[in-house]
Length: 351
Ligand SMILES: *Cc1c(COP(=O)(O)O)cnc(C)c1O
Image (cartoon, rainbow, N blue to C red; front, side):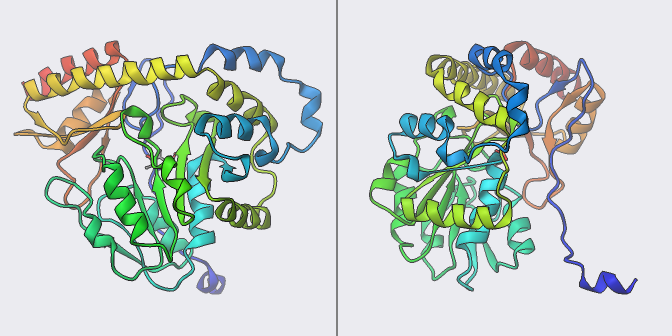
């Protein structure tokens, strides 16, 4: 058909499987195994149906922005809120990566980055991780149109120290550097304090992993007031009312209960430490992970086979048919009970 000549053609991002059946063990998309804090359930009761007649408030003017600003000790004018961090990142690509030079990101990383670069027509260059899956800061010191990387990196879980993050931000003062901190709450050190020194830094975080709210779709960015203003200008030019009223109300409660949040993160870190020992005992190797997942390869059984056999047991983990990582599985840290079921299945498959 003639009209197809003018269609923007993209190879879409492939999200993890989302089976929706009772009884499965879902360790494939890094959701929290724990519910959001009790305050969220209580706030659901108080939602007002009549309020839904009205358009929602502007996110940056809500209690949610104030709560986040308080949590991170920044001004409300330093917070941008979007529909999940995927929306925030997509807006950031559109807003900041227009220099014409290639943007830089690791070869093994969140597989949405090259998809957005393609869809927005942004040139890009992938920088290989070293043999231990570490990002090499020196690779990010050539002329470029911007830099983005997750810290800890996904799907490896490898954390870069704050000094090296700063080295990359400092070497790129003429472009925007985005640090995607989707997993920073599981033992990493955030780059947020660097915002005091660098107006070209954007730190992106999400409610989807550590804050137990993947289904609500809340993401946010922290940056200098100028960066945030530019992001809002683009966002209001594309789609004005994105976050709905219930999400804005319930998100506040998820941030307010700091003790509950800390205890969930600690539980996941504890289960992760146990998983390191259990997986090692069963013949797996993996880089030290600072995420709520472990990126592991088995010494003799191919990852694809383990992935498929686990699935037959209703245990879902993530596997990519991609160069360099096709013998690895990314296993989300679940509850202790879910992990016991995983180890029992692995004994059958790899034993
Ligand atoms: C999960 C994830 C995101 C996106 O999460 P949202 O659910 O859209 O907030 C972004 N970056 C990385 C590295 C992730 O793993």
